[in-house]
Length: 302
Image (cartoon, rainbow, N blue to C red; front, top):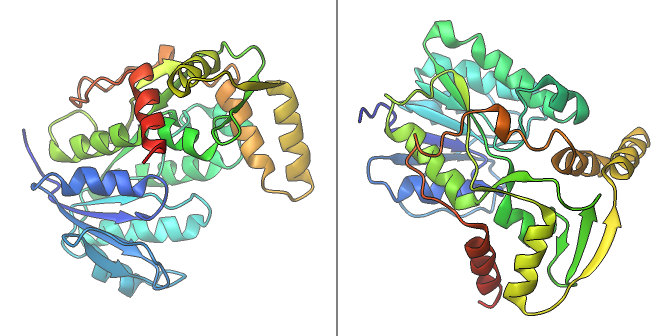
Protein backbone atom coordinates (compact mmCIF):
# COMPACT_ATOMS: atom_id res chain seq x y z
CA UNK A 1 0.00 0.00 0.00
CA UNK A 2 1.28 3.44 -0.96
CA UNK A 3 -0.30 6.38 0.81
CA UNK A 4 0.17 9.80 -0.77
CA UNK A 5 -2.99 11.48 0.53
CA UNK A 6 -2.55 12.02 4.26
CA UNK A 7 -4.01 15.52 4.61
CA UNK A 8 -7.60 15.69 3.31
CA UNK A 9 -9.88 18.72 3.03
CA UNK A 10 -13.63 18.19 2.67
CA UNK A 11 -15.82 20.93 1.23
CA UNK A 12 -19.54 20.68 2.04
CA UNK A 13 -18.97 18.21 4.87
CA UNK A 14 -22.16 19.24 6.67
CA UNK A 15 -24.50 17.94 3.96
CA UNK A 16 -26.24 14.61 3.45
CA UNK A 17 -23.14 12.62 2.59
CA UNK A 18 -20.45 14.58 4.44
CA UNK A 19 -20.82 13.03 7.92
CA UNK A 20 -20.30 9.50 6.57
CA UNK A 21 -17.13 10.52 4.75
CA UNK A 22 -15.84 12.45 7.77
CA UNK A 23 -16.52 9.39 9.95
CA UNK A 24 -14.72 7.02 7.58
CA UNK A 25 -11.65 9.25 7.35
CA UNK A 26 -11.40 10.19 11.02
CA UNK A 27 -11.64 6.52 12.04
CA UNK A 28 -8.41 5.91 10.11
CA UNK A 29 -5.41 7.39 11.92
CA UNK A 30 -3.54 7.63 8.62
CA UNK A 31 -5.58 10.72 7.72
CA UNK A 32 -5.54 14.28 9.00
CA UNK A 33 -8.97 15.67 8.18
CA UNK A 34 -9.99 19.28 7.63
CA UNK A 35 -13.26 20.81 6.48
CA UNK A 36 -14.07 24.05 4.68
CA UNK A 37 -17.32 25.70 5.79
CA UNK A 38 -19.12 29.00 5.46
CA UNK A 39 -18.82 31.47 8.38
CA UNK A 40 -22.55 31.03 9.07
CA UNK A 41 -22.43 27.22 9.14
CA UNK A 42 -23.81 25.54 12.27
CA UNK A 43 -22.40 22.10 11.40
CA UNK A 44 -20.37 20.38 14.08
CA UNK A 45 -17.45 17.99 13.60
CA UNK A 46 -15.31 15.65 15.71
CA UNK A 47 -12.63 17.45 17.78
CA UNK A 48 -9.86 15.99 15.63
CA UNK A 49 -11.16 17.79 12.52
CA UNK A 50 -9.61 21.12 11.57
CA UNK A 51 -12.23 23.69 10.55
CA UNK A 52 -11.47 26.37 7.96
CA UNK A 53 -13.98 29.06 7.04
CA UNK A 54 -14.40 30.92 3.76
CA UNK A 55 -17.01 33.52 2.85
CA UNK A 56 -19.34 33.71 -0.14
CA UNK A 57 -18.14 33.95 -2.82
CA UNK A 58 -14.80 32.28 -2.19
CA UNK A 59 -11.68 34.39 -2.28
CA UNK A 60 -8.39 32.97 -3.48
CA UNK A 61 -6.77 34.11 -0.22
CA UNK A 62 -9.21 32.11 1.93
CA UNK A 63 -8.89 29.06 -0.29
CA UNK A 64 -5.10 29.14 -0.30
CA UNK A 65 -5.12 29.24 3.50
CA UNK A 66 -7.44 26.23 3.68
CA UNK A 67 -5.61 24.28 0.96
CA UNK A 68 -2.10 24.81 2.33
CA UNK A 69 -0.37 21.41 2.75
CA UNK A 70 -3.50 19.48 1.72
CA UNK A 71 -2.91 16.31 -0.31
CA UNK A 72 -6.51 15.72 -1.37
CA UNK A 73 -9.77 17.63 -1.70
CA UNK A 74 -13.29 16.17 -1.59
CA UNK A 75 -15.83 18.69 -2.84
CA UNK A 76 -19.39 17.73 -1.90
CA UNK A 77 -20.98 21.10 -2.66
CA UNK A 78 -23.82 21.20 -5.23
CA UNK A 79 -22.80 21.66 -8.90
CA UNK A 80 -24.51 25.03 -9.15
CA UNK A 81 -21.95 27.86 -9.14
CA UNK A 82 -19.51 26.43 -11.67
CA UNK A 83 -17.17 29.42 -11.44
CA UNK A 84 -16.70 28.76 -7.73
CA UNK A 85 -15.95 25.10 -8.43
CA UNK A 86 -13.40 26.10 -11.06
CA UNK A 87 -11.78 28.59 -8.66
CA UNK A 88 -11.42 25.90 -6.01
CA UNK A 89 -9.86 23.56 -8.57
CA UNK A 90 -7.47 26.26 -9.79
CA UNK A 91 -6.35 27.11 -6.27
CA UNK A 92 -5.99 23.41 -5.44
CA UNK A 93 -3.59 23.04 -8.34
CA UNK A 94 -1.68 26.12 -7.19
CA UNK A 95 -1.48 24.74 -3.64
CA UNK A 96 -0.07 21.42 -4.84
CA UNK A 97 -3.10 19.22 -4.11
CA UNK A 98 -2.48 15.74 -5.54
CA UNK A 99 -6.01 14.27 -5.76
CA UNK A 100 -9.43 15.88 -6.22
CA UNK A 101 -12.70 14.00 -5.69
CA UNK A 102 -15.67 15.96 -7.11
CA UNK A 103 -19.25 15.62 -5.89
CA UNK A 104 -20.39 12.82 -8.18
CA UNK A 105 -21.77 10.13 -5.82
CA UNK A 106 -24.96 9.25 -7.64
CA UNK A 107 -26.13 8.66 -11.20
CA UNK A 108 -23.93 7.64 -14.12
CA UNK A 109 -23.10 11.17 -15.30
CA UNK A 110 -20.30 10.01 -17.64
CA UNK A 111 -23.16 8.82 -19.87
CA UNK A 112 -24.21 11.79 -22.06
CA UNK A 113 -27.76 10.44 -22.24
CA UNK A 114 -28.09 10.66 -18.45
CA UNK A 115 -26.89 14.27 -18.48
CA UNK A 116 -29.36 15.07 -21.24
CA UNK A 117 -32.25 13.62 -19.25
CA UNK A 118 -31.45 15.43 -15.98
CA UNK A 119 -30.20 18.99 -16.61
CA UNK A 120 -28.70 19.44 -13.13
CA UNK A 121 -26.09 16.84 -14.07
CA UNK A 122 -24.63 19.20 -16.66
CA UNK A 123 -22.84 20.95 -13.83
CA UNK A 124 -21.19 17.71 -12.75
CA UNK A 125 -20.10 16.99 -16.32
CA UNK A 126 -18.65 20.50 -16.69
CA UNK A 127 -16.67 20.12 -13.45
CA UNK A 128 -15.31 16.74 -14.56
CA UNK A 129 -14.28 18.16 -17.93
CA UNK A 130 -12.48 21.00 -16.17
CA UNK A 131 -10.64 18.57 -13.91
CA UNK A 132 -9.41 16.71 -16.97
CA UNK A 133 -7.70 19.89 -18.18
CA UNK A 134 -5.67 19.95 -14.97
CA UNK A 135 -4.17 16.49 -15.35
CA UNK A 136 -1.18 17.95 -17.21
CA UNK A 137 -0.57 20.28 -14.25
CA UNK A 138 -0.02 17.43 -11.83
CA UNK A 139 -3.37 17.03 -10.07
CA UNK A 140 -5.30 13.77 -10.43
CA UNK A 141 -9.02 13.20 -9.86
CA UNK A 142 -11.45 10.38 -9.13
CA UNK A 143 -15.18 10.40 -9.84
CA UNK A 144 -17.10 7.91 -7.67
CA UNK A 145 -20.46 6.75 -9.05
CA UNK A 146 -22.66 5.11 -6.41
CA UNK A 147 -26.25 4.97 -7.58
CA UNK A 148 -28.89 6.11 -5.10
CA UNK A 149 -28.11 6.69 -1.40
CA UNK A 150 -30.05 3.80 0.11
CA UNK A 151 -30.49 4.66 3.80
CA UNK A 152 -30.75 8.40 3.13
CA UNK A 153 -33.29 7.71 0.37
CA UNK A 154 -35.43 5.71 2.80
CA UNK A 155 -35.24 8.17 5.69
CA UNK A 156 -36.12 11.21 3.55
CA UNK A 157 -38.75 9.50 1.43
CA UNK A 158 -36.75 10.35 -1.69
CA UNK A 159 -36.88 6.78 -3.00
CA UNK A 160 -40.68 6.76 -2.80
CA UNK A 161 -41.23 5.20 0.63
CA UNK A 162 -43.05 7.31 3.23
CA UNK A 163 -41.99 5.70 6.49
CA UNK A 164 -44.43 7.62 8.78
CA UNK A 165 -47.41 6.93 6.51
CA UNK A 166 -46.41 3.38 5.54
CA UNK A 167 -47.04 4.27 1.91
CA UNK A 168 -44.94 3.37 -1.12
CA UNK A 169 -45.06 5.17 -4.46
CA UNK A 170 -44.29 2.52 -7.07
CA UNK A 171 -43.04 3.50 -10.52
CA UNK A 172 -44.49 1.40 -13.36
CA UNK A 173 -44.64 -2.18 -12.06
CA UNK A 174 -41.86 -1.71 -9.50
CA UNK A 175 -39.65 -4.40 -11.02
CA UNK A 176 -36.91 -2.27 -12.58
CA UNK A 177 -33.62 -3.02 -10.73
CA UNK A 178 -31.42 -0.09 -9.67
CA UNK A 179 -28.02 0.18 -7.94
CA UNK A 180 -28.09 1.53 -4.40
CA UNK A 181 -25.33 2.24 -1.88
CA UNK A 182 -25.40 2.88 1.86
CA UNK A 183 -23.83 6.08 3.16
CA UNK A 184 -21.30 4.15 5.24
CA UNK A 185 -20.15 2.17 2.20
CA UNK A 186 -19.67 5.42 0.27
CA UNK A 187 -17.55 6.76 3.12
CA UNK A 188 -15.50 3.56 3.16
CA UNK A 189 -14.97 3.79 -0.60
CA UNK A 190 -13.63 7.35 -0.34
CA UNK A 191 -11.28 6.30 2.45
CA UNK A 192 -10.02 3.36 0.39
CA UNK A 193 -9.35 5.53 -2.67
CA UNK A 194 -7.27 7.94 -0.59
CA UNK A 195 -5.58 5.30 1.57
CA UNK A 196 -3.77 3.63 -1.31
CA UNK A 197 -2.53 5.75 -4.21
CA UNK A 198 -1.29 2.65 -6.03
CA UNK A 199 -4.87 1.56 -6.77
CA UNK A 200 -6.02 2.28 -10.35
CA UNK A 201 -8.33 5.16 -9.42
CA UNK A 202 -6.46 8.08 -10.94
CA UNK A 203 -8.12 10.30 -13.58
CA UNK A 204 -11.15 8.09 -14.04
CA UNK A 205 -14.62 7.25 -12.83
CA UNK A 206 -15.06 4.22 -10.61
CA UNK A 207 -18.35 2.48 -9.84
CA UNK A 208 -19.51 1.05 -6.52
CA UNK A 209 -22.85 -0.14 -5.19
CA UNK A 210 -24.05 -2.03 -2.14
CA UNK A 211 -26.64 -4.03 -4.04
CA UNK A 212 -29.06 -3.95 -6.94
CA UNK A 213 -32.71 -3.98 -5.93
CA UNK A 214 -36.15 -3.12 -7.28
CA UNK A 215 -38.93 -1.23 -5.55
CA UNK A 216 -41.02 -4.33 -4.95
CA UNK A 217 -38.24 -6.16 -3.10
CA UNK A 218 -37.47 -3.10 -0.94
CA UNK A 219 -41.16 -2.79 -0.07
CA UNK A 220 -41.40 -6.48 0.83
CA UNK A 221 -38.46 -6.21 3.23
CA UNK A 222 -39.88 -3.02 4.76
CA UNK A 223 -43.23 -4.71 5.37
CA UNK A 224 -41.45 -7.73 6.88
CA UNK A 225 -39.23 -5.63 9.15
CA UNK A 226 -42.08 -3.34 10.29
CA UNK A 227 -44.64 -6.12 10.62
CA UNK A 228 -47.40 -4.52 8.60
CA UNK A 229 -48.76 -4.19 5.09
CA UNK A 230 -48.15 -0.86 3.39
CA UNK A 231 -50.40 1.24 1.18
CA UNK A 232 -49.31 1.45 -2.45
CA UNK A 233 -49.70 4.39 -4.80
CA UNK A 234 -48.86 3.87 -8.47
CA UNK A 235 -47.29 6.23 -10.96
CA UNK A 236 -45.25 5.88 -14.13
CA UNK A 237 -41.80 7.01 -15.16
CA UNK A 238 -43.30 8.75 -18.18
CA UNK A 239 -45.80 10.67 -16.05
CA UNK A 240 -43.23 11.84 -13.48
CA UNK A 241 -40.76 12.96 -16.13
CA UNK A 242 -43.52 14.88 -17.88
CA UNK A 243 -44.57 16.58 -14.64
CA UNK A 244 -40.95 17.38 -13.88
CA UNK A 245 -40.47 19.10 -17.21
CA UNK A 246 -43.70 21.08 -16.77
CA UNK A 247 -42.67 22.24 -13.30
CA UNK A 248 -39.24 23.32 -14.47
CA UNK A 249 -40.78 25.22 -17.38
CA UNK A 250 -42.86 27.11 -14.80
CA UNK A 251 -39.77 27.92 -12.75
CA UNK A 252 -40.45 25.33 -10.05
CA UNK A 253 -37.12 23.68 -9.25
CA UNK A 254 -38.89 20.82 -7.44
CA UNK A 255 -39.49 19.44 -10.92
CA UNK A 256 -35.83 18.47 -11.01
CA UNK A 257 -36.45 15.84 -8.35
CA UNK A 258 -39.24 14.31 -10.42
CA UNK A 259 -36.90 14.20 -13.41
CA UNK A 260 -34.21 12.61 -11.26
CA UNK A 261 -36.49 9.91 -9.91
CA UNK A 262 -37.85 9.28 -13.38
CA UNK A 263 -34.26 8.71 -14.47
CA UNK A 264 -33.48 6.51 -11.46
CA UNK A 265 -36.46 4.23 -11.99
CA UNK A 266 -36.38 4.41 -15.79
CA UNK A 267 -34.53 2.35 -18.36
CA UNK A 268 -31.18 4.12 -17.94
CA UNK A 269 -31.15 3.97 -14.12
CA UNK A 270 -29.41 0.61 -13.97
CA UNK A 271 -25.87 1.00 -15.31
CA UNK A 272 -24.38 -2.00 -13.52
CA UNK A 273 -24.17 -4.17 -16.63
CA UNK A 274 -22.12 -1.56 -18.48
CA UNK A 275 -19.31 -0.95 -15.97
CA UNK A 276 -16.73 -2.69 -13.82
CA UNK A 277 -17.67 -2.78 -10.14
CA UNK A 278 -14.84 -1.45 -7.91
CA UNK A 279 -16.07 -2.80 -4.55
CA UNK A 280 -13.61 -5.67 -4.41
CA UNK A 281 -10.66 -3.53 -5.52
CA UNK A 282 -11.43 -1.09 -2.71
CA UNK A 283 -11.86 -3.86 -0.15
CA UNK A 284 -15.44 -2.88 0.67
CA UNK A 285 -17.54 -5.12 2.88
CA UNK A 286 -20.51 -6.83 1.27
CA UNK A 287 -23.94 -5.32 1.98
CA UNK A 288 -27.22 -7.21 1.98
CA UNK A 289 -30.59 -5.61 1.21
CA UNK A 290 -32.55 -7.49 3.87
CA UNK A 291 -29.94 -6.74 6.53
CA UNK A 292 -29.75 -3.06 5.64
CA UNK A 293 -33.54 -2.69 5.75
CA UNK A 294 -33.61 -4.36 9.16
CA UNK A 295 -30.84 -2.05 10.42
CA UNK A 296 -32.74 0.94 9.09
CA UNK A 297 -35.98 -0.07 10.82
CA UNK A 298 -34.16 -0.79 14.07
CA UNK A 299 -32.65 2.68 13.87
CA UNK A 300 -36.14 4.18 13.75
CA UNK A 301 -36.79 2.86 17.25
CA UNK A 302 -33.86 4.72 18.80
